[in-house]
Amino acid sequence: MKQKAKDENVLAQNRQARHDYFIKDTYEAGIALTGTEIKSVRARHVTLRDGYVQIINGSAFLENVHIDEYKEGNRYNHDPLRSRRLLLHKKEIAKLAEVKAQKGMTIVPLKIYLKHGFAKVLIGVAQGKKEYDKRETIKKRDQDRELRRKYRI
Image 1 (tube, one colour):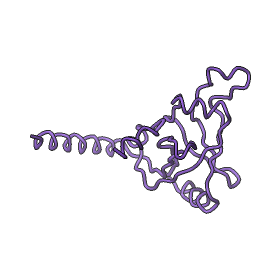
Image 2 (spheres, helix red, strand yellow; image 1 turned 180 degrees about the vertical axis):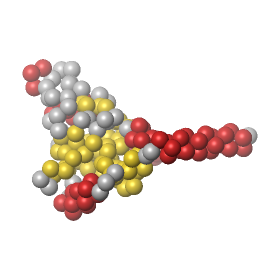
Image 3 (cartoon, one colour; image 1 turned 135 degrees about the vertical axis):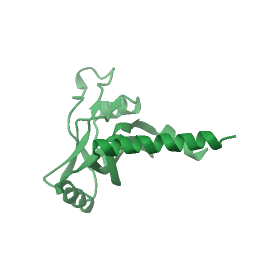
Image 4 (spheres, rainbow, N blue to C red; image 1 turned 90 degrees about the vertical axis):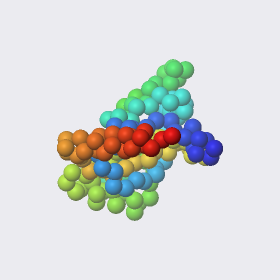
């Protein structure tokens, strides 16, 4: 029952990321949002699909994540694709900058959820999969599904 309550707090997930990347490590970060953005996030109007994290001058920014304009926001609405600052410790940002400098590594948002009333984003340090890796993952998943189906009573 506790797991179900935890899943209700997930506002958006990037399922495509687990298909396209090997996730090596994850970090939890806060997001600096405006008033209309947080209302739109709580209404689950978020798309993480093409998002990524960029490190600029010792700060981490969430790029290319689409948060719809809040319907009742009128002239105070936000730009849907603006850069949003991630709230991380300096040591974590330094680690992420080191990883980002390596060839083939990227940082992607995996999900946005609420924790104690605050919006948090789970970001993953990821390495891109090749086409044959993706096929191998699909093959393994299908085999596991067949085994579960076969031994289910």
